[in-house]
Length: 293
Ligand SMILES: [Zn+2]
Image (cartoon, rainbow, N blue to C red):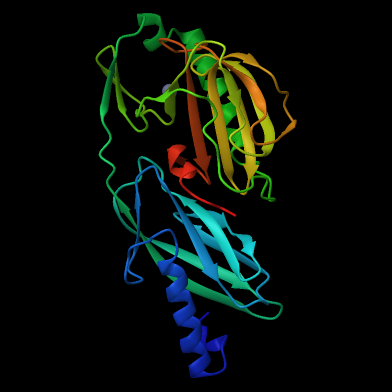
């Protein structure tokens, strides 16, 4: 719907667009001078804040065919976190935002420019059976992948996290998010999380509030916990030696949920920490820098 249909005077329209422009500049762009496309690296997130009139009731965005829910950040502003998948081709993509008032609907189009993250390559030598799977193992892996995939469609429509996210264990991040992996000389799927090197048994904490949506012992991921933080945001904790929570349990930020291990396909004790945001596989550390209020 054209903006003119929603606003009854040119002056008001201009003011409104100006507010939107200012909001666009504050969308985690910091130093940008204009409302030019928001630049987001492959595998990272952008915090989008929109200042709208107080009678706006709800806001939703659409990016790459995914619905992006906004949440109320403060009385005047709505915000959303938009994730760009690590394998998303570079270039501009439309980000369309629709807001609802009691008797009208408004819409604005933005552009998110996906820029290259230039990920590295990781060469791994693993036991042959861990890479060239026999048919029963392959069947197990496919079943597990399906089991993990379905949970990503079941996020709570409530925001279950608050403020900022925490790094779930003390240790050294290995900087391997997005790495293209070569296993025993064969190209494999990219590395979709970040590995944090930590001693066996070190506590693993919930990065923020949420609900445990899946726990299990998986062939690749080992003992794993999946937390739904609501609004399409999930965090994952893999290769654990111990799990201290149950499916369905509500967890709070800083709560110990398990211990670092090397279960599944792991070459040593570490935490694999992953984040999925409305279908996009993103670097969990890109969440850490954001203040959500
Ligand atoms: Zn990993």
